[in-house]
Amino acid sequence: MFPSCYLKPADSGGKRSALAKLLLGVFVVYALHTAWLLYGFLNNKPCDRSRGELCISSYLLNRPRLQLSVFTCLVPEDSQLHPVLRVEPFDPFSTFEREVNVSLPEETRANGTLYAAVYVHKVGVSPLEDRREVHYAAQLTAYMSPVNKESQKDSQKVGSVRPVSHWRPLLSITMMSEDFSFNKAGLPSDVRRYMRVFQEGRQMMYLPLLLVNELSSRVKDLKEISSSSEQLPLTVSYEGISLRKFRFWIHLHDIVYSLRQFGFSEENIDEIKETLVGSNLYLLVLTALITALQLVCEFLALKNDISSWRKKKSMAGMSRKTVLWRCLCTLLIFLHLLEETSLLVLLPVGLGACVEVWKVFKVFKIQLNKKFHIKKLDEDEQRTVEYDEQASRYLSYLVYPLCISGAVFSLAYLRQRNYYSWLINSFVTGVYAFGFLSMAPQVFINHKLKSVDHLQGAALMYRALNTLVSDACSCTSFFSSTPFFSSSHQLSCFRDELLFFLYLYQRRRYAPKSRKRESANKKVKTQ
Image (cartoon, rainbow, N blue to C red; front, top):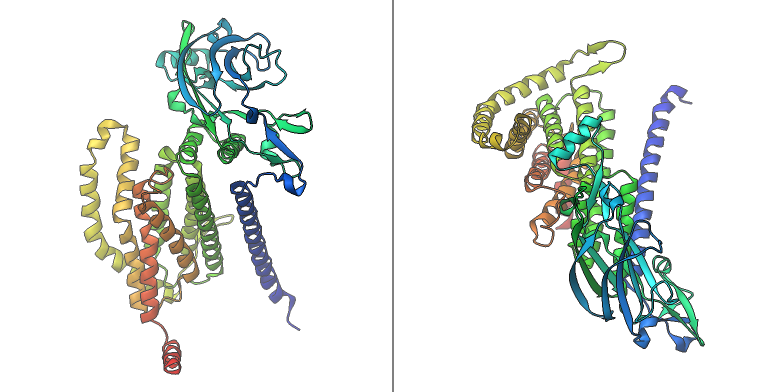
């Protein structure tokens, strides 16, 4: 029997491994569930009456005479409607765009709201009296922080910057104009909430599926409503779409709603809107699958990286300067991306920065228990530090002149922004341009020690695969419109790939003799 003290580390390690496998399994199940939903989303099977299925036909199949009316109101579902636009006769299969002027009531000019009520009803019948009408209410105003300097000064006098009402100059109306027959037993849940069914004789029919596309509005297009604004222009556009595209817009609206619930700002949501709306449907599905693959690789790389560093008791062979440089680079990149990218990038980069800071404490043997103290180095670690200082000294002859010249050439950037932005930009430019040089001390130590056993190959493999997929996608013209990563950030990711190839070369060259003999024997057997 072994003592119980020897069982605790293995038990805790087993629990951590089981937890990691559980999280990975949950993610795989979620990815498969999403793929199944996408398959059902792309394959819409119409109802077949010959099989005895109960079908629901479209109201547009009989080609009724319809009218499109747009009103404004202060409260949704209000009976006090103010007419803005009337399209008669209305063709659901057409596409048009109209420019109108909307009169603003006093409540809206006094920092209030205003809604647009879109009705599709019979010609010559009031929408409030038509039983076969469909309507959709959309907000024409949004509360945002004032962009005008005078409004900001007035708000600061009150005590805080109060959001003011802004005008949305675009109203995009979409309606499913496809003659699609639904099976009542297999009616999609996303379509069911937009559907109104009625009985006409022995046949069940559904009214037109109407939707106001709010994804076309952007924060940059909003205009602040002042107290003197009596009228504002409004562009009303209409498009008849298919069932697949209608369901596509529904799911995108649900995604935007979920992002708002999670606390994403409107600027970050706008970036996601541009990516979702400006992409093809099939291309978007492919991007989602690639993103899922990258998340799995990033998770496995982070898991193996943390696991290997937790088990390290000796820091022999690990370059202090490389770990410290990588930590500083990650923090600078995080500060740089904090100004110009979305939370989808900031979250993994911020998590990676925390891990790199933890590595610095680990490699320098800094402990923060009750007192701040640093452990002493053993003989192998002291020899590693000497090799590290020697490599850093040789490297400084090249890095310092390059960084200074780069900072001098970037002085023109100081005229456009403040000193803090110029400083961050100069540092990040140096990281992107000369970041690959940070691998030189570690490569030099591996060469001196004639070994790479102190490095974690699994984490390097997963991270290299992740960046290889990301860089391959960014180099294609199809993915060039994705605004999540900047080109300089993508260029810096090649460091992981180069490091992985150097690791493979050194692992091959500095492999033990027993491993070389095994590989030689395998070659002889195959021959």
